[in-house]
Length: 498
Image (cartoon, rainbow, N blue to C red; front, side):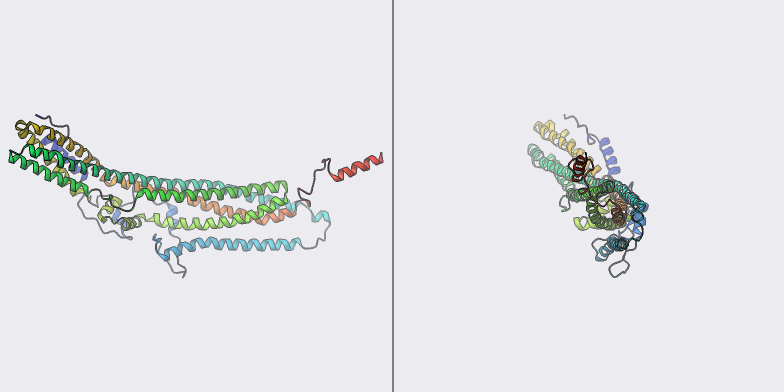
């Protein structure tokens, strides 16, 4: 006699235990889920994903008025495919362009006024007109503004790092979800292939060996039909097999864009830092040519700061609209890109007691069929092996196949449960709506401080330049230079006088 394998199929009591365990693992409330809509999705969900709560900044930025180019109100629901919503975000970015225009206008008027004051005739004594007292105040105000800009650069580096961390968490969650989906496909393919091989080889051999006993052949054919039914039911569990959307490709695309965004901000931060440092150096050295070059560079960085401010403001408002209610948009987008059954999408995105498990029926039928197959093989083992010793080998192979199928079945039950993918979804939302949102706010603060510091420096640099010595660095040789023509002339006069 064959010793029964160490599995949940080895006895009737074990089969009952397996049935009870599987029922608890794959069953859920059979109540129908409510219809999903963008307005009632949050109520149907019964709460956001675990660990995710929209922050106060999300709620605050979500309240920013949205208007299109005709200044008509637009709903703040995240809808990047709609033209009115795109226009609303463009208007938010255009506010930074308006700020740049006002900044340049005020700066131009101030510099024009300063030039007009410098061209006025000096009526006082030269000593009073060239008094350095005003120059020191202007220089120190410029230095203070540049130091404020350096502090803003530090905030920019932190914000850039936080934004990158949030996007990295999003990419990691997508990769983990892709691993789960790939594992489901792999287990289903492996199990179906193994069952198909058992039907084609072991069960066929068993039928040929037991051909003289028609009742045993009928039992073997019944096991064949149930094995084919199990293979068909398990094959339908690989819901992501023919889906054109690949999470790993989405993660690669997001990482590619984030890499260039991070690099662009690093270059902007370094350029801003170099401009501030070399401007401070020019003021300390009282070098006119260095101050002139840094004035031109400051104007360029000022324009870049206002431009980045517009992009960051639009991105922050759009991200806050998404994070205030992310489920409707993600659900509708996934459904449009994948074409999956809405019940499956609701199950994984909501993952609560309201939505039933769409795989419950197939898993239950598969579990019952596997238990029935093992019972039939147990009966064949008792009846056929004493009469047909050649049936022992295919029966052992079939029991091994059932043991492997049982293990794969338990793994499928765990992988198909909504907890894993829903946890990845919550982690992706936390990365975007917490870390990336915080990083965007710090980058926005950096751009604002940089623009204010550079605007103040551009107003102060011409006035500080006016109080520099009359000669430049290259036109003012050192007094102790032996090759100085004036020193040589004094030396000749001194020799002639001796």
